[in-house]
Image (tube, rainbow, N blue to C red):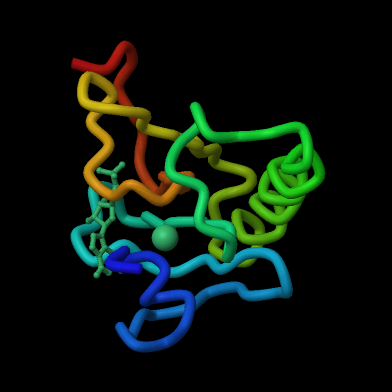
Length: 113
Ligand code: 5GP
Ligand code: ZN
């Protein structure tokens, strides 16, 4: 499949991995928006939040549990961080493989523009 994140998962596109297990991969964003900017993806291709099925409940929970560990290991668990999922055109989703941005290392503005 012609999907950048599937290619990162299968290794045909290199990435700077920060965490990997059977279900998920986390890697540094190529164009970081914050001092710490990690992208967490399921290895299974799911296009967006709108494609999450009941069978994915454990997988989505797993992403958040592992986000804690990744935040700790990257020094942002105590200062705080934001986990962002962009969905669809208005949400600013540019890669159609569901992913969660882990953003931290500086104070973040709210609300988004
Ligand atoms: P989106 O805009 O879909 O929410 O987020 C996609 C993210 O993937 C962007 O922050 C973009 O910088 C990142 N990205 C796109 N292509 C690559 C790539 O080839 N390698 C890495 N590490 N990140 C990428
Ligand atoms: Zn994919």
